Structure formats: C-alpha cells, structure tokens
Figure 1 (tube, helix red, strand yellow):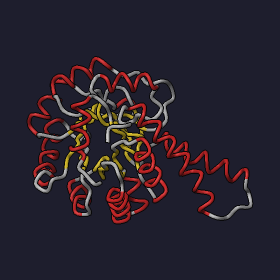
Figure 2 (cartoon, helix red, strand yellow):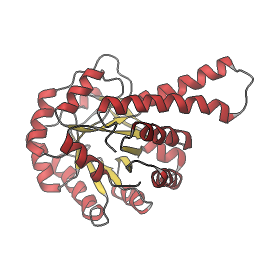
Figure 3 (tube, helix red, strand yellow):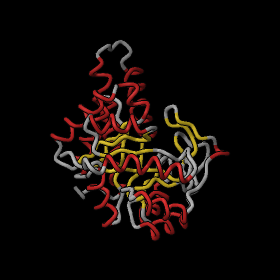
Figure 4 (cartoon, helix red, strand yellow):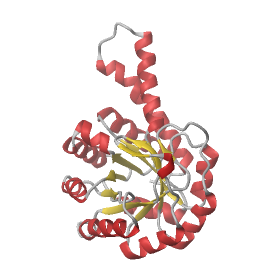
Length: 283
C-alpha cells in the first residue's frame, strides 16, 4: 500500500527501529526491494536520487513506484532523495511522490530554513511528508559532491531551531557518515545522535550508510536513527551478480537471464538490511 513517509517513520520513531530507504533506477531494482519487504514483512521507502530521475525520468520512476506500492502487502512510501530546488520537488509531488527531501544544506542556516519552509507550506497541504538536511554529509551521490574539507557535523542547537521554525517531518543529520564507498571505517558521533534526538523528538535520518559496520548501525538505531539510506551496497550486490553470470555464461544474450540473478542478489541484500535495521516484522 502507498503511504507517506511520515506514516512509516512516526511508527519507527515511536517504537525505536529504522526503515530502509533504497534507491531505485529500474524495474528489477523496484521488484527486488518490494519482494524483500514482503518476505521480511517490513515497511519500506523507495527513493529516487538525482541520478535515478535523470536516468529513468520522473514519470517512469513515479509509475513504477506507485504500481509496486499499490500491489504490495506492506506499507511503501515513494520518496525524492536530495531534492535540489523547489520546482523539482513540486514536479515529484505532482507525479505522486508521497515524501520529498529538500536539501538546503548548501545554504547557511537561515537560507536552509527558508527553502524548507517554502516546500513544507505546499507539501503538507497535499499530505506529502518532508525531509530536510542540516549539516553537510561528505562524499558524492550522483552529481552532488561535498568535499571532505567542507563536510560539517550537525549542530544540536541549530537543529532545534531548524525544526521549531520549519515543522519538518524528519531530519537528515551529519554525524560521521559519507555518500559512496568508504576509504576507511567511518566513526559515528553517537553522543551527537543522542543529543539531537533528545532535543528534537522527531525521526532522524542517516545518509551514506552503505559500508557502515553492523554494530555501528545498531547503536545508531538504538539512539534514535529511524530512516537509513542505502544505495552503494545494493549496487555492489547487483553488479557483482551480473559479472558472475556473464563470466559463467559468456554467450548468453538474454537480458532477463542476466538481470534475474542480479535482482535476486539485490533482494537478499535488501532483506539483510531490513533485519539489521529492526524493521522486519513491523509492517
């Protein structure tokens, strides 16, 4: 069933678990995520990044997501990840997204508050939930890059002012993760997560979570993380399965047979994350 991000995340916030938000680019990826959600009885968030929208188009992504959600036996939200401007966010809302992120982290605090309030004024009227970001998460996601020297952790006092002034539904915080592949092991600032959660009392979001050790994820969830974005780990599972199939079957030219094992590998990776996050059995 298609629901808002708020519906999914408020339950996670209330019951102290996290829901996975997985990036979608094509039919097989959507199917893999939904099948994993149904097999684990987990709520799930299908999300489209800038690269996904550029690759498939907002119409294709929206229709794939809505079709999958309507037929799913578990709650599914369709989410825009890292919306870059007001017009793009409105376009996704018009196409049926039930949750959107406006990423104003490139602005100073006042500018971030202003653009977030502008989006919320429209989104909440039509029942769409809104995620924002405070602090700058390093690394690269599609064409959005934040150099390590420019990455900044979320200030708890600024976060409190931000939420009070915007009434945002969930907040992505910078606490030591980064987008893309890690060169070393990430060190999460657990005290910062705990402090922000106590100040805000809303669902908190962790971006750049692929490659973060399982124990670190579990601790972050126990301290108040309720939405966890995963992309790179799924890409690795998907692409490795394709490479293995082609290596073993070099003469096969059937896309269905090539992509089938990749879908299964991704499904297993998604299900593993759902169990790790504590969302399995929560639908």
